[in-house]
Image 1 (tube, rainbow, N blue to C red):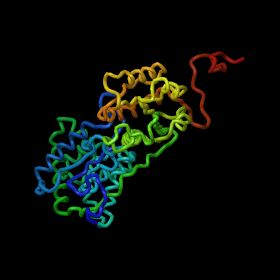
Image 2: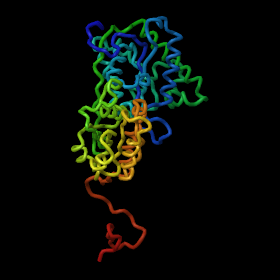
Image 3: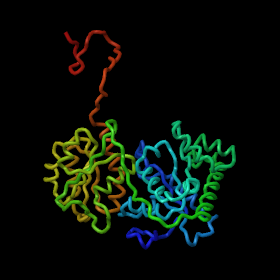
Image 4: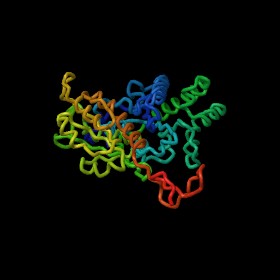
Length: 388
């Protein structure tokens, strides 16, 4: 298959890249950093790209590397990543305990592997260069760790790499020599494979994700409140996806299973699920208050107002109405930059609010009585009085 056979308008056909960096996004434990990015992943990508560029002899023909921090605003992320996976010669996954549980990361891997189906197993394996980003505690992951360690010839460096993972070596100045050794080995392997055994142009399978939903981690529910035609695309030509679909993709990339539903279905799911409501500022404060009345306090609304200039108080008035109704406070967004910056914070806030205020149900089955410090007489827990 040649690129002229592939009907795509998302950059298919060029330019090729030496490597594609894949990693598992995760929800942070604090609000100190943006939840859709990882500073150390970005730093490692930049340093690996520099190391590859220094060794590359085809730098004029092939771009150095790609990771999802390079995707432009408004892009369909799955399509953009599929296009990037279609032109990469080496797939570099950053293995961590979360990588093998993250449907988005595994979807990237499966998409790239679809291009290797016609190669022998030995040759296909050379186009996947795993990195031990964090130690893998599970016995089932030890084969993956072993593959990652094979690229490092120095035994002492390999021991530190195995014990700490490359993220720690990157962060700690005491391990700078070991980090540089691993970085050099990775860059050498990428350039060797890409230049000696380049992949023929081929379209990667479209990136798909299938997050696992279980009772312990209910799916995030996404819905919209708007009088506009569905699917709601308030940013028009600036955004390839409906806003609900964009937020859903952001949540899935963070490993949060997600459902996009209408407001009627969302009401039914709200008592037992984290929930985000994307509110059209054009609806008006009074109608918004009526439409969302009765929803649980952990529901997180976001007022979207691209057609309202900075001086128009309407979006802020709607946000104030929602805050008065005791929903979590989220400032209105107007521009596409504000919306995309807010999306990962929005889904993590919804999860946090649900964990803090949502229902807590003990698992089915018998339960041991909790030990008491007071008298052993029977106690009526709901009323706080001893039973007769």
